[in-house]
Image 1 (cartoon, rainbow, N blue to C red):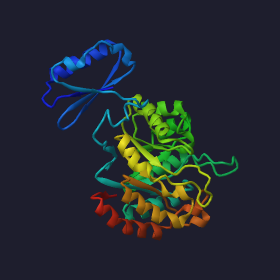
Image 2: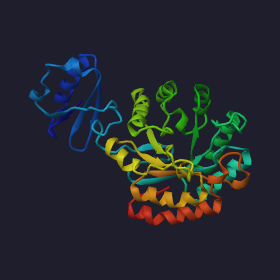
Image 3: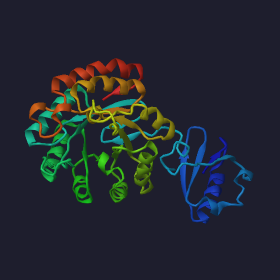
Image 4: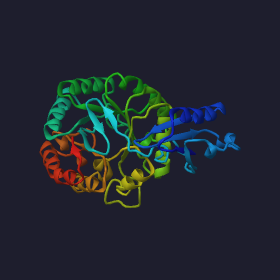
Length: 338
């Protein structure tokens, strides 16, 4: 449940309420808004039976929360979150673009990609050093060597860097090199990994699982936030349906649904959603129009030669054109693109 304080509630009154909650062994989550303070209660609320908070000075009302996720819930945190990563901010006022190759293949490829996506206006360099592939015989990534290239590319260009982690071992390496971690669709419910990412304190992007409901996705985010990491960005990357025309089916309605249910930013990955290069542009425009907080797009100097996901990767020229074409949409949404 959440306890909504009156606009004129004193600090002493807020402390009184929190002490009552904590005395019963429950956790308190404070959200200080422009006008009111909201006190979220995490734990077994049955311990508070018989406590009449409404009678306390400064308490406006009690709002029960029926959803199993609390900390990511908009009822707990009514104001939209802004997630700061390096020199950029992901949130309601910006349209953040993350771009780069699906896989880090070699030093020169990654540095070239970093230079080109920055020139086109991206704020992040994406690149996979650990690649969870369907076939065990497919390219699995350069691992720590790839992470070193990511760190160098970010340092040379000023771009923030993001890389997927697939295991606790991968996490222990990635935290030393990149600015943001990514939990991929296959690991959305790898709860031990989620908890460790939560303890890392490093910003994280959580992709929706292949067949996950939105509530399952938000519960996965709850695992991360419950360990103390509040810097979470959600990513809709398409879900598995009966349709075969595209690699996955982009659930674009997830954007307004998430903005209704949660305070966390949500971006869209049209590359993995479709698996088809020609569909990336229209779905990117639709993402901006529907209110997404950004995009993650795969870009490669020679898609036909890519070791991973070449058919959905844009060339440098195509990506630059897309960034130009997106500007009217982001201007209409009153968002700064980067």
